[in-house]
Amino acid sequence: MNVSIAASRLQGTGANALELDNVGRHFGALVALSGVSMKIRAGERRAVLGSNGAGKTTLFNAITGDFLPSFGRIRFFGEEITHLPAHERIRRGLRRTYQISQLFTNLSIRDSVYLACRGVTNNRFSLLRPSPSDGAMAQAESIIHAVHLDGEAGLLVGTLSHGQQRQLEIALALAGAPRFILFDEPAAGLSPTERRDLIAILNALPGHIGYIIIEHDLDVALRVSEYVSMMHNGSLFKEGTPEEIENDPQVQEIYLGGGHG
Amino acid sequence: MSLVETQRTEKLRGSGWRELVTPAHGLLLLFLLVYPAMASDFFLTQIGGYSLILGMIALSLMLLAGYGGMVSLAQITIAGAAAYVIAIFGENNSGVHGFAWPWWVITPMAILFASVLSAAFGWVAVRTEGIYTIMITLAIATACFYFTQQNYALFNGFPGYSGLRAPEVFGLYWRDPVPFYYLCLANAVVAYAAVLYGARSTFGLTLQAVRDNPRRMRAIGYNVTAHKVFAWWLSGLIAGAAGVLLAWFNGRISPGSIAVGPAINILIIAIIGGLRHPVGPFIGAVVVVLIQTFAIDLVGAERFNTLIGLFFLAVVFLSPDGILGLWERVKPRPDRDAWGPGPERSGVRE
Image 1 (cartoon, chains in turn brown, orange):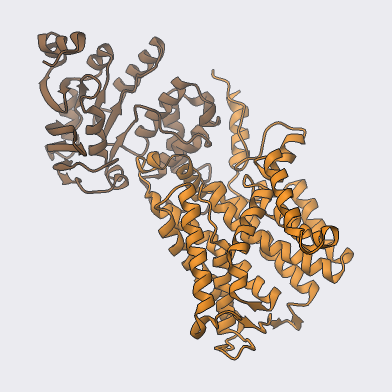
Image 2: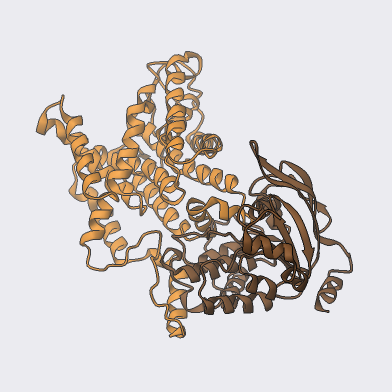
């Protein structure tokens, strides 16, 4: 299938995009993440499910360096990134979106996406204005088009609707040739139409870009992923294909009954 | 629709300087250029030159606060550092140091030293946010004040240095009223235009984005600390240049020039003028200098600070965006020139 084709496109390194080795995080006495190990192939699309407080977002924060893990090791395409600052991980091709939109409210969409494209290039301190022929500017326009925000490109982010802000969140993650993306509940608060748009955008991503998606909406999650990891109380407790997970009685109990497995 | 928008965008994004060439700028510059023909020496130097100098120092604060969200109380300290370099390495009549190096050596040296010092201050301060940035820069400014006041070996302590002289170049003594005014004007225009242009440069955009959301900036690959420190370095260049002019203007530099009072004065100037546009600090400087100069005639020497305080209260009460904000309220067109060309409102989804 297209995943293996995509993997071979990466010069046959056969490397995993992401390897987590017993990654954990505690806040004082609270253990938010109690040792998660995971291997995700390049180009793989995986969903992480779990009830609130299961540690999904904490896992993302540890991977992207929003805060460092308390223990464990993280490797990204074979490179140890456990102790790298967040921006260094991004420059290696890792991207993320946030559950609650983290945007630049006083900038326009175009400028926001332009900055996201420039973030992984040289000369970020340039005191010259970007020229319309700037490569990053052209890339920004095509990404804005990909997330269907063409008509609004010049608007200030603070004036956008919630749905448009969610689209921009995704645009920022797509900028600058990502290799792997972490989507944190991208469908939260979207209308049914916007959800369909979102699924179309995710399915239209180039094959070499893998991702992990956190999603409460099983319909969305199972339609955009090929493998599913279930988390509960800060650790992984089940992995499988979408069909296996959907029909698993334990999963159904946690999702429908709110019990403790 | 999309064609119209594209053309509009090209114009707004205009990578050149064209955006700066507006009728308002033209009229203002014309007035400032012919001002010496109307003004007495006193109005030329004590009001005109001094306002431009204080305006530049406040502009260096506006750069940090308006675009970067970092309110600093140490800008006068940075300007003072440049002035001390001029005093120590140039000529003074205090009998301490005064190496009498030529002006074309000490001037760039002073500005460079001030900018590096500013970056160092910034490197300490960027670890904090909001009110804590104000507090830590106040602490730095206060520490520098006491250090210069108590250190005689380097800073000649309480009396500081006097007898600083502006250079004589091209047969002109640059502290004479007319040359000095034009020197200040040239510096202020360059600083103002650079800030206005730079606000929409790649770095200008990154700085505003860091102000809006540092966490997101990290998550798209930016080293937030480095970008903030670079902004401090740039603001140090402006404050440093103003500091050199201040040294020549006063003919002296002493701890009193960099005390807490003058430090807060810069913040008051910036806030009275407005932090939303680089012209704000200059408006604030003219207003404050006029009040400081003439309040004594109105209310007597003991009460002039009360008048400034009341005026400050009135401005902040009526318009949180300073005098600029008042203008924005009454000016005919609703779209505000906030951070540059302003929001485009042509987007209609097709």
